[in-house]
Length: 237
Image (cartoon, rainbow, N blue to C red; front, side, top):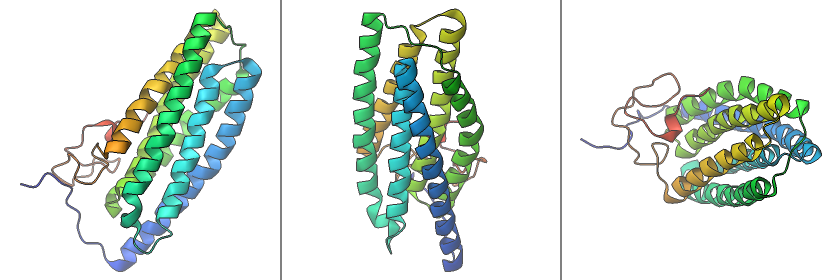
């Protein structure tokens, strides 16, 4: 039995409809993440928070990911651009991981004490509300289209939701208990996850990639097959 994904041949009208939905979702993701990046980086600089700045840079990666999807589906044959899109995402994630690692280690060694950031906490709550819904819609659309790139974009949105939880926890612990180390530790969590995503995107690994692990095209509600068990089909918060 083949281990690749099995997708029914979509009628032309259905493929056009799903492609339009993929573009609309990418546009929504891009718009939200532009605002999220500006607010997170500004709040992070004001509070001296490595985790918030790292989260804002992750939002910049999300913007580039959405832009890549829009670029891909502007082509007559979107699937011809998927591998190049994955490599571009991998480079961006690698740069993010390197920057946040250096800054987090520097903050831990120097004993930096970031200020409390109510704005940052509010932003994390907003992202935890918005991102799971957006991710689910993106992954369902990607699976319906048989598009690795659209599904991967939904995975990155789910990653943003999990990072919101990690960064939010660090901000709350710093604000309420004075645990200044929680902020750079949350930054290291971002760096570790971004590094893993960079490696998998560069190699084209994961069930989001062509020829992934799922053995049956059964939808589990998030647009993932029943045999899908890696990071791209991890549940959203």
